Length: 399
Image (cartoon, rainbow, N blue to C red; front, side):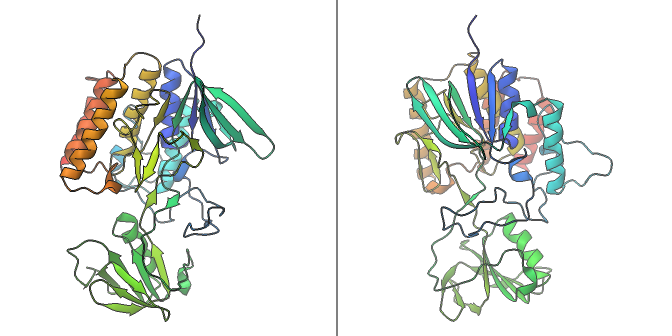
């Protein structure tokens, strides 16, 4: 009787936990590597900050979480659980439609316990290198006391993409970035226009004299934000001079003492060695067939949780089901040539429609997101199973 495939899962956040459950459910031998001493990935709040918060120092001490204290989900709780295991209301918990991050962290721990996943996880084990050697993947990892080198038939990357800052290029003479010391803030610039920028701006506005949000959006005019007496909206920062004068592209300017970058994160796999087969260029990880499988290395290497602007729990779960069924032999992938053709066509369609390379993995285009959800659910043989949840996703996409 053949031995089951040995699969390394890197990361024990949402993606890693979902992958562990699905892979084990297909009879595969699963080992989950987790750098920290806890599961949950980015959903475990840590009040510490990086030794270099801007991320310029590659040797900085990294705090592997992007949560801020006031963060709440930007999806309703009905979409913050798995298809067969929803986020429940618990006694004494946060029952709001958009709960705080503590509730999601509690849910992930409950999920791990319900499906006995902790025994698969090596806590405190950091993966430092993953490389294809012959017919196997060599995974090198280290703990506080040891260094290990092991062979696996397949590797599933579940490391997330909310650790390495993605910074815009702005001519800056000198500035000081203060993190969480709001009591010292006076005039603050927040660069970014997404949910976190608004959340943080509102928090800072409670103690700062002025908050100025800068965005690349071409339609923005200088204006005060509704319902806030000390928050202004501007176009992007043009430059910062030696005397701390911040000039905006809209012609306005203000003297500021602090700049917060809320410009998102970039994909980062410093441990992965593929001899140039996988590249990251302008935040595009590629080539990836449907954002999961690199054609030349499929199915033995896969990426879970790459898409952004999606319904994260359900999309991640469907990706994991797909990968598990492929590795168990129940589902066949197209040929390498066919997968590459799909990737190239996807890139061409993006270019034709005027989308820049750095939004390759943004699934906020309704047709793209819904078609990927339907593809994954069909390929996983779900059909009528969990149909209600799939329709909830559909309604969310199209409202």
